[in-house]
Length: 245
Image (cartoon, rainbow, N blue to C red):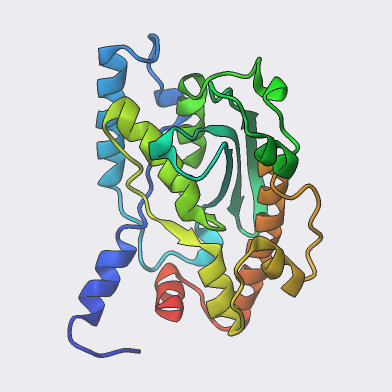
């Protein structure tokens, strides 16, 4: 255990940010998205959820982890790129207890190179709902747990860009990066891509760069990492943070 001055305070400050955040399905109010009242409610709920704190001593097996992946038309939301696919899985007690996936109409053409990578074309999302229509459902699915993903900063950048542009708010819950967790828990690496981490654990990679398929791969990866946590005696959120720090 690190006994340096300020370590306990920094640890608690970091881990206290792993709070439950998001919107429960039953909390969604009536009314059309985009109204002033609706947007004000979204902002208020995001702030209220930010006040909830995860217990440092919560056992990992009791924590709800939410694996998230998005597919986007590019890499720069501030330059007009948009989400066109979202998938997520809720994992608790080393079991998948819920899954979510949807296509999104980004309102722009999906570039040819992105279609070649993902297998999803502009025609595929032509009749899909806009993000405005699915935002509440997505936020609801992400609520109540700790979000994890591979290169998760990309997914958060797009979701937060949307939330700020639409509601002048953002996701307050931090996300844990699976690449970092894989390196710290295996003691090897680096693992620059999801493929490299999957190869290490002999996880089959099918339909890569499709959000739902990538979430399945990441879910399997996280199950393997949880097994390593048990083997290393990492039992709580505090233990996990100390190990990856």
